[in-house]
Image (cartoon, rainbow, N blue to C red; front, side, top):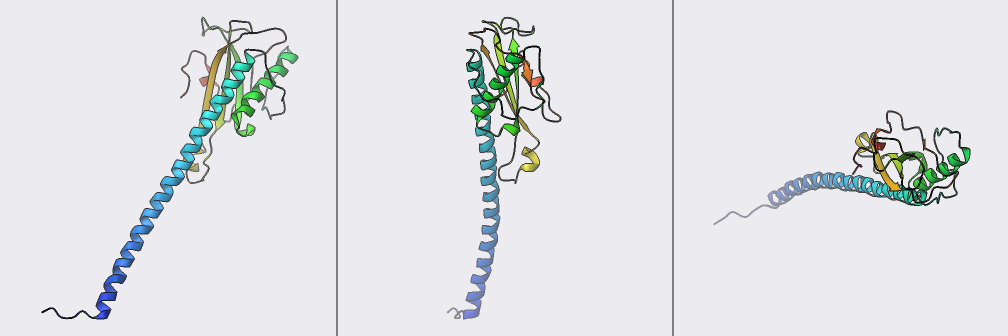
Length: 197
């Protein structure tokens, strides 16, 4: 015959089990929170990359057909001038189109417009029908949650696309580039290099 259990022993066991369950719950909850915030941050980066590519695609398609847009007040950074001020204005409009169609803050992006020789990408192109128009964009990434800012805030997303120039009447476009972010350059914007993924 088993001796009867006392109440204190029985409650003592339950308290110990409750404590273990709380510790397990705290560990699992912390891990789930980190995983969820990681999904949010990297999902946002993926969406932003798609937006960058969309902005570049719009600019290349429209620029190749002499549709430059109207906005020139999108906060272009360090854009120089060439002997063709009207062409510069059109190019600035095209750069602003790439930024605004990306649906991301303009201050976080830099744009470059360049002409490409389609038949021989290593040689410089001109603004003429049948040539290529290349638009490149870079964006400084950010951690939405702040948890991964030590890693994500020091990275940059890039996109580039080359399209065919269909119409090219004066004054047209000129080659212009914004000043890249500190420590960055336009090396990825080489027509002979593979497009970023």
